[in-house]
Amino acid sequence: MTAKSPFPALLAGASLAAMPTLTLAQSDSESETLDPIVVTATLGPRTVGESLSSVTVVDEDDIRRQQPKEFRELIESQPGVTVSGNGSFGKQTGVLMRGHASDATILLVDGVRIRSATVGGPAWQYLPPQLLNRVEIVRGSRSSLYGADAVGGVVQAFTLPRVQGNRGWVEAGAGNFDSQQYGAGFTSVTEQTSVSVGANRFRTDGAPVIEGGDDKGYDNTSGVASARHEFDNGVRAGFSFLSAEGNTEYEGGEEDFRFQTAGVNLDVPVTSHWRTSLHLADARDELEDISDFPGTFNTRTRSSRLENWLTAGTHEFVIGAEYLVDKVESTTAYDESSRSNEAYFSQALLNFGRTDVHLSLRSDDNEAYGKEETWGAGAGYKFDRNHRVRASAGTSFKAPSFNDLYFPGFGNPDLEPEEATSYEVGIEGRYTRWFWDLAAYQSDVEDLSLPTQDQAGSVPEARLRGVELTGGWVYDGWSLKAAASVGDFEDKETGRQLARRAERTVRVDLDKQVNTWSFGTTVRAESQRYEDLFGIGRERIPGYGVWDLRASKTLAPGWQASLAVDNVLDNEYATAKRFDNTDFIAAGRTAFLSIRYDFIR
Image 1 (cartoon, helix red, strand yellow):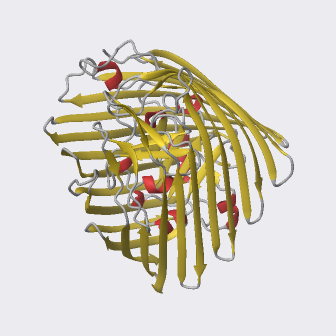
Image 2 (cartoon, rainbow, N blue to C red; image 1 turned 60 degrees about the horizontal axis):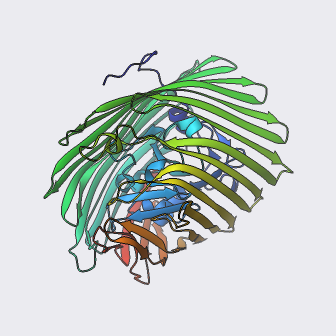
């Protein structure tokens, strides 16, 4: 099967890549903390309120305070987000957003989409949080902007520097389970140019992933690099790169992995009202399974995207095209090893004083499963400077993976995409030092895929609905973020709760700065969930709660010591089961002490 396109494969769009070039105010300012500028929801810069979307931002200060060893720690139990995993430290991880499966949420790294084309979803567990400066979590349908798989939402991680000046850092740390981490990096940002490089290594002997099992280790060596420059004529050019390689052990074997993204972008102001952007990207998800059933599964996604941004007064319009090719190299003989996708899309961001209207439309033509058209519409009304109400609706679809279509003896080449229609209403209040946001949503899904690893299939009709409440407060060194979610994710035919989805979650992050000390805690809890096991049936996984503590101390100018103790009460819990009905257990109490030196010129 060969890829054909009516336009060159080198076309690319750059809002995704150009957006990280924005230089914002200091990340600890109250205004940005309470209504930060985000780019993932609308392809371009908008405050959270103006985006007319449900968005959670994890900024650089949050990441530094939490000292995460895995990316999941930043997003688990956030509003609308449930994480399932086959143990701790680099083990297989799924992110289920608003009840949708893990491969129905898109992961972007600096505007570059990465996923495994064979299983369909991204390898969330390999993204190194130590090299990230920011994470944006956009909940709700986004296929009309991003195409296939943006059903539950979009998560975007940024590595690019945001603050002007020359900065560098060196860090080393150690903890129980014989865990060790080393990192260093440097950034230089001026009004026209930014350059950034960084490297990190995290390794651990790990913990058992099943009761009575042996320790299962994890090793991740990662690096990032980027450069941006704005010429005197207004043209901006840049690139970004992230790579993570290593090894993870699991019950029954181990895996060598490679997780890599690279993007090049060019942004050209054609006129004062017309800007065009070009983005070329390459993403690689490579895996070698070393077990009794060894195999290699390497996937590569190349994409090119062109966006034209037009302004007319207070209105903005986007017209674009995208071309994407997936390729698979594997020791498994897939019936097809590549497929291409052509897409055309448009967006209108309209402003009528207190009223904002967002409209989007996209058409995808995939040589494997045909054409899909999606749309999105949203409206918001600002009552006053503090309060806004919003409503939105849209359609989305999840593409069948190479495993779904072509895996020998398993795939079905006639499989149709999962389709969904989603609705949301929300109201928010944003003030000088605090904010709140309340949202209710519903998605009606046809042929919703099952997220389990042991049983293939789908639910003919599913209804996913819920309510999310978030809030935050900053004052006099205090920082509070809180979120609670209640969902109802059911198979409409049987009325049963869908597998692996926790329907109630809560998370509270509280931190206090006292002179040279910083203290913080995170408390989060999730309700029960279920696992559907082939040949066994439905099994219950109990809910759980976790309490984390953290503290840091400035020892001297630039020097900081940090201690994080996660799962202080050493609770044993699981978020998934093995094929034999054995729980995949979390590591238990973990402690990590690190020393960091930051220098600024």
